[in-house]
Amino acid sequence: MAPNNAIRNIAIIAHVDHGKTTLVDGMLKQSNVFRADQQVADRVLDSNDLERERGITITAKNTAIVHGDTTINLVDTPGHADFGSEVERILNMVDGVLLLVDAVEGPMPQTRFVLRQALKRGLKAIVVVNKVDRPAARPDWVV
Image 1 (cartoon, helix red, strand yellow):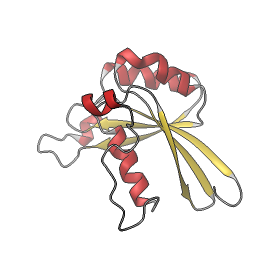
Image 2 (cartoon, rainbow, N blue to C red):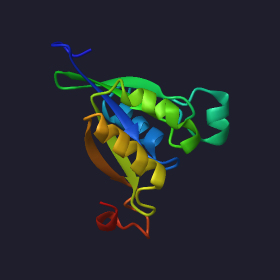
Image 3 (cartoon, rainbow, N blue to C red):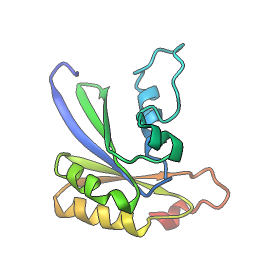
Image 4 (cartoon, one colour):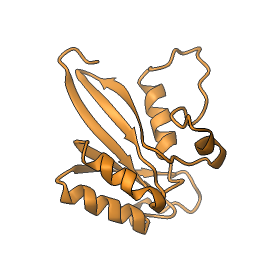
């Protein structure tokens, strides 16, 4: 935990397969949570066998990284509409959201719905455009 105990709780919201879990993996690696020589599996937070088999997040998972004097609790939320109640439950516990949008597909209806719910709760949103390296990427259109 950061020395001055500043804590921010941030949910990552996006449609299924838009890269939430991969983003969390990257943030953990970038934050030096793992040793340089440590082998880390992809989708480190997807510990449930069904999640690993299907390649999707079913239940929200949390982890923490430290940035400067702030501990950031990241919550990786499910992206499929079937698990919307899980996402709404998480929105009641966080300070803000990272809205992750695929640069090819753009914001999907479920993502728009979840964003509206977050904004209704007064949560701040940071937009993150993912998959900009794909040939059909349209980051300007997405934003």
